Amino acid sequence: MDEGGNSSGDELAVGCILAIKTTLGEEFEGQVEGASKAGPSHNVRLLKANYIKEFSLIGRAEDPLDLTKCYLDLAAVQAREDATIRQAEIEAERIGVGVTAEAQNIFDALCKTLPIRWDKTDIIVMNEVRVSSPYLPENVVGGTPAANDRVKKVLELERRRLRA
Image (cartoon, rainbow, N blue to C red):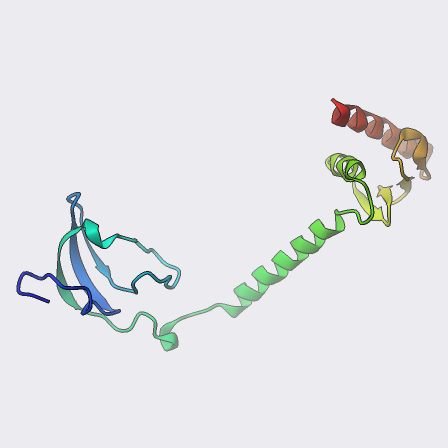
């Protein structure tokens, strides 16, 4: 680093605290956490070196990457992982295996208004009504007459909407 506070960049090691003035007139203080590398998750400001008009070294901080001073809430990480896995399983169950794109579109449309799931290539609605391929109102069986009629009506409306 020369007397004016300028450096070739080689001496700006991790942990240096700098006062920076940009070519756009902004002034701020920051700590070098790395060069062209991702650091820990906190407020990070990326600044291209050619936008630095001048800087001065204020001091050196403790190693920001010191693992003995990092806190990681493993319970929160585990809970987030569990929730993500549950969500992925729910989404995977909504994908029909061995069904046509039209069948999947019908399923996706029906699931917006009714509780449904796949049973191989059949769509099970409200755990009592079964809709078999080719997923027309006449392919609706089971359940109470009221549930059966409701599924037929919703299926007919969704098929009409998907054709439009």
